[in-house]
Length: 456
Ligand code: TYD
Ligand code: MG
Image (cartoon, rainbow, N blue to C red; front, side, top):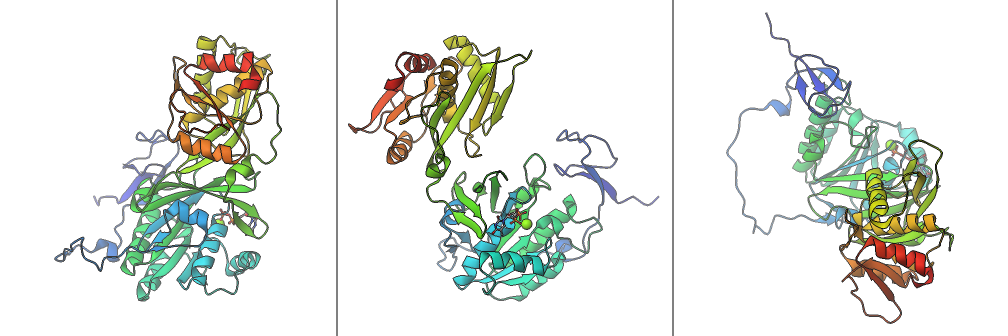
């Protein structure tokens, strides 16, 4: 009997099965297996005859890696100084967050700087792209557009140019290779089209930027392997209810990761925000119990955000823990420490925690500020308006050191904050206009807020 070339591939992790099952044994996702042909493309991917390799020395002066600055400072910061020639970048984000707008602005700027820019869309027609370009005021630029989905055609077109190009593919999930039977967006198609496009772009030392959809849990749709294939992975995130957007680097072979770029979505496109702290603190109400300012760090950039907590008696058997912008398990831990070490009773209280402005905080250094907000709400005592907090809290209630205290302090001071509550031994700046509360235990923070809120 002829061997069937059908196989089932998990759309979440890329595992291959010979039979369909409801749950992927590798990643434990349900209903993610799709039948795909185990077909080998007859195009350039299947070339099996090798050739002798010519090795190069790294001290060869002719090997260059120029970075193409976009003149959008926030983008240049996140990419580590611009897009590198011959590199591949993947940008993921929720639908409607502004990926196409951002990329159009990037190529708009690069084309003004004399780069040869190509924008290929599989999602929108030319008239739709034109409408957006009109809105952004770049319709007269020299960007070349095409509304196609055949990745082979795109690869051939890219390779036929003998010039470096900037190529945007919007989105990788809409592209397909005709050699494969599977539908666009399936694991085999996404993997093969990416591979084909990468080869074409590297051949001409071009910059390839791929837009990727995200799944409901927020990761880029398609196999994880996609993230391995590219040089840089960026996420464009934000909340549709808020105007600002954050570009975050997750992987970068040419620069630092965890850098962020902040933008505001306006009627005529994305505007860069060079001082995000002032944006996050814009509508701040002063002297309200439950509010505390956290001096955080995103990559190398200090950012101040307001943390709001509301603690109210609960009528529910298991009290509510509603949280926006922070980690729920981190909050549970903090509540347990407050309860066990500081005798602050929270087990019959509802807790609502909000990081103002829709930004998400991942740093453990926010523990102390969150604790300050909760304690302030429980005790109904406002913390003074010019104080900021940072420090990680351990299970025994100890306040632990965080990275880069001086950067945080300087940024906060610049924005008018002069009182710092922080871990012991992290007083790093001598300035008589600043005052420092170095604390060892969470208990010290409770006393500080309870006894004399003015001193904080
Ligand atoms: P878009 O770039 O199409 O998002 P994505 O490609 O990530 O799906 O952005 C769509 C949203 O942005 C849409 O809701 C309209 C809004 N928008 C503006 O507010 N101002 C603008 O100048 C543009 C072009 C879009
Ligand atoms: Mg789009």
